Figure 1 (cartoon, rainbow, N blue to C red):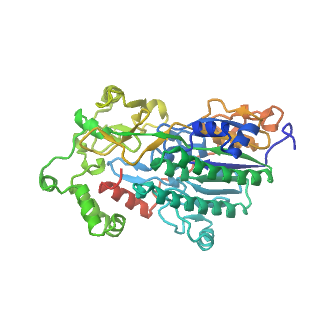
Figure 2: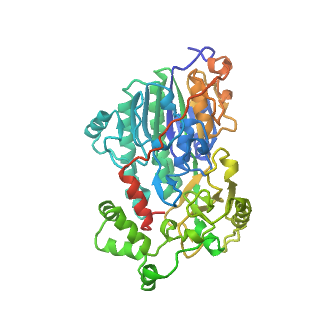
Figure 3: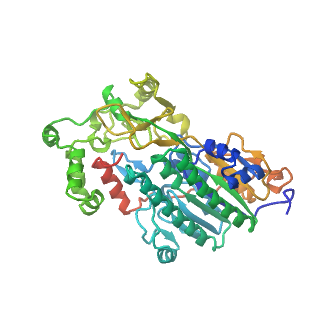
Amino acid sequence: MSKETANPERAFVLGLDGVPWDLIRRWTEEGKLPNFARVVEEGASGPLSSTTPDATPLAWPTIATGVWPDKHGLYGFQHLEREYTHRMNTSADVRRPELWDILSPAVVGNVPMTYPASEIDGTLVTGMMTPEMDERFTHPTEFGKELKETIPDYRIGLSWDEFRNRPDEFREELSTLLETRRKLMGRLMDEEWRLFFFVYTAPDRLQHLIWEEDALLDHYRELDDILGEVMEYTESRDSALFIVSDHGFGPISRFVFLNTLLEREGHLQRKGGDGTRGALARVGLTKNRVQGLLSRLGVSEKSLVEHLPKSVVDTVAAQVPGEHNLYDVEFEETVAFAHGSGNVYVNDTIRFDPGVVAPEDVPAIKSELRSLFEGLTDPETENRALDVHDGDELFPTDPHSPDLVVKGKEEYETAVSLTRDVFRDSGSKVASHRPEGIFLAWGPSVEQGASATDANVTDVAPTILHALDEAVPSDADGRVLKEIFHDGSKPGRRAVSQREYGQAGSATAVEADFDDVEDRLRGLGYME
């Protein structure tokens, strides 16, 4: 079928977590990634702007729904509650239908924020933030049993943090993880589908710990080989192929601790030294000290928090002084605080209990905070360290969105722990997220050598739906990237149609192990 009459019957979405446009562009031009180069030459390509903040739990749901976080509902891995507590976000919190809810049958594999598995028309294997391979790990449930039997070494994920001082061992483990993902993808290729949506998170994991050209290129050549397999597969099935990343990547060297800055400037109050906390602090018993003692005794932190009752762990965490804002902030005396990936909240009386800021005072405080963050300079370099975005502008439809989003400039990374110093070297975390990911399209109807113009993550879902002759959600924030389609093809000629798809998600929190484990780890100061 020629491009003049082509209309793809299927769409394959290959997700590559954390792959930046600048690396793909350079290495394809240099001939180091032949399959990526073929897609660029024969199809459409360009940078893909991420969400703000450019973080996994915001960006993948945005890619899948076509709306910004104020509509789909996820601002981070955790949902901030009215009482300043947290619960883990899950697939039940995504408030808009995702592509696999619209296109069927669908195959979905390893996409972050999809646990618990939805009862879709098709097969779904959940990805990042899956607590364990339980009965909610796949749909249908029977597929999970098959997966464990046929790929016995399959793992949910791999934390780069476990391998801070073992880069060679980390690369070996990551290669094994990549191979098991590829086996899963191969098995899912046997299923019937109209939409195939599969994500590889390995690039993100590698780049946090290793930002060296040779190591990165070796890994990207593995991804290029996977892409070649997918291209051969999709070409035989009259499928359009879309390759996307949720954000880009780049080197970092310094952390900026937002809550420590807020404390220094009098906007945040750390819990005082009275009572148990003060006594423990005076004898040097901090969370870091407790962590070291447990390690020397051979007690696993994860095992500890999994097996002790939550009430016990929370009580200890609240009494032992440390560096975490969940337990160490005196919220009744705090005007503003940071949470998650640079989200800053004014502690107002409407949103929080007990808030301390009257609603009419919020704009003035936001302005003061913005000046504070924008004016912050690194004492070692005198460079400005932060960019600031207004939450009302980023998230206009949600009155409960963050008031400000603060991002590090260039090699600065924001963090929320309460530390002694505002600035600290990033240590073994050598790289982190950047706003510019990738968008590539290839196959029936796609114009050869086309460029995606000013594309962002909200454009992916509308473009895929239009390519398959489906209506775009009427409340979509993204647009159809019509410039990537051949003028004579059906998607190129056809006008964009819209329809209401309704709401999704559930108001009921999902009870699972990570609801407690992640929160306890953070509360004990073991995690950022």
